[in-house]
Image 1 (cartoon, rainbow, N blue to C red):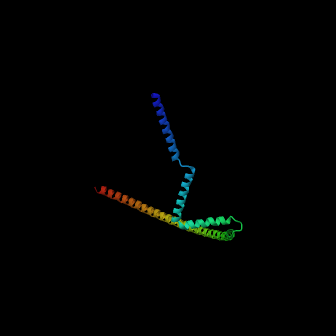
Image 2 (cartoon, rainbow, N blue to C red):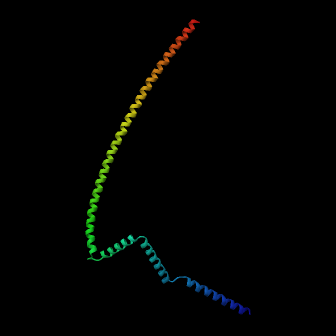
Image 3 (cartoon, rainbow, N blue to C red):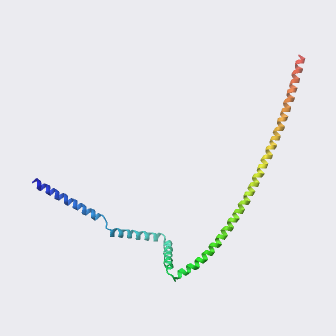
Length: 168
């Protein structure tokens, strides 16, 4: 009886393992299902973008159409592209000349401002130097005056002391 029970247990275990494997196989989507899901997601994403940005969508469609048309040798888009390219090159040359002239003018103005700034700094330096010399002269004069006053005071004090001592 034990062998019968063991064989039944093993049979049940095998059935459970097989059922688990079938469930796992059902859960893994096939390649077709994955591609289908990604296509639906891409369509939904494009639809939402087109609703949020209609002008960009139309402009992108036109750009793609022009690119495809330009791939053909005798297409009107290619001819128009050549004409537009020539005009764009002319406009780019004109724009670069204008930018160069503007840059030249900015550099000249900068040089003028630099010179004016240097002149101002030089003037300020001269004024500071003049003021410093004036203050030094004034200080020297006052020190000399104070020295003279101190000598005079010392001399007068000495005389006063000497007179005072003579009287007593």
